[in-house]
Length: 338
Image (cartoon, rainbow, N blue to C red):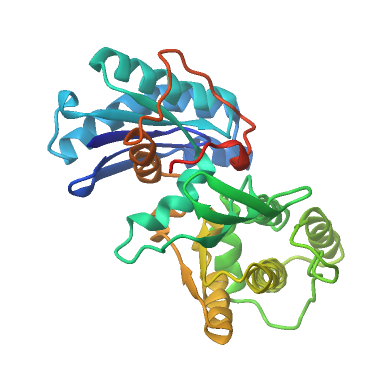
């Protein structure tokens, strides 16, 4: 079964083809960073316009990369939420229309389900059940994954996502956009111990997160300093240490209470090397394994959507001829596959 995947939930336009017989046949992605960088964040209207301009050429190119014609497709999967409504509508409209014209099924896929299944595209995928840490610009959550569609939310952010906190910190320090890679790069030159930032909500029971206070602490610290390249690096290091330590502490707690032996880390912040190193150290000490998608599949991509689409389409879970998008959509609302 050959499934075309389409991803337009935010500011990355992407298309991919997953083949059940041969694996991932091809994937393409077009970045919109140049459009949004002057504004220091994603502008929803600009994102939707760029998706309209970029998506169809990407679909054509990924079919060429996959050595396929459009008539060879057996199904289409598109992200239908959560995300920016206008951006989601572009991918959903094209995906559903293409499927209708070819008389093949189409499935609207949950963006975060795509992320937590992304490690399945690797050579050594995790087995079910496992615990998943999903960390991105819009989400921070711990999920117990028993099988595809069988998800229990163990903890989530009460305010801001950790990726949003990275972006805001970068903006406060005058660093480039997107903030995650910029803060990580600056932190390399930081001096340990110059600043100590709090580890929010780690001194109380539970698995929920909160990063709004960490953003405020960063803003207040920066306001009290005369910013120069070294001070910026020191603040970036202190912020990254606090954010990463918070995630590691919560993961440790979740693994101990859930009894799971496998942890999946996905989403854009999952590409942070310091987070990966500290989680790997923790896993070695505690005796469990950590799985990651390759860095290019940590950020938004269509390969994960094509794979998740294949999982659901092969079990005849597809949409009717109409389509809807869900800018807000809980993982726990999804139906199981088995």
